[in-house]
Amino acid sequence: MGTRFHTWRHGERVGTDELGNTYYRTRGGKVDPSLGFERRWVIFNGPAEATAIPPGWHAWMHQRSDIPPSQETYTPREWEKPHRPNPTGTVAAYHPPGSTLGLNHRPEVTGDYQAWQPE
Image 1 (cartoon, rainbow, N blue to C red):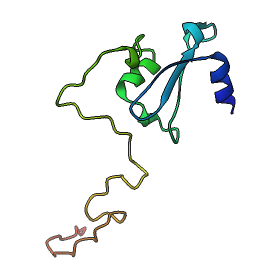
Image 2 (image 1 turned 90 degrees about the vertical axis):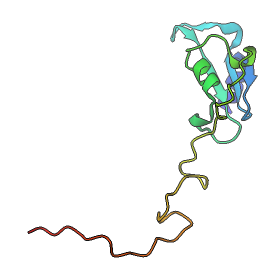
Image 3 (image 1 turned 135 degrees about the vertical axis):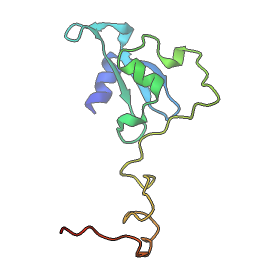
């Protein structure tokens, strides 16, 4: 509720990314005297997850770029993969073969391993 009110009162919409997140800055690009630069924030489409911000927007959010991706004409190269949020802790997380969290069962013991014994 507080963020929505602050956004309505002081914010200026800058753009939206492919994941549906909406980006804002202080109205008119006004510099915050306590910070020394303009405030920039995001309202996530879904749960607040920092890895859900694509690289171009991440650079803009962290003052690495003055031009937001919505005003750029960047086309990714053919070898670049689309951005994916970090799936750790979700059902899409990677579980190696034999993991207790994986879908497969642990492989049977083959007997080719001999435990170390102190002498």
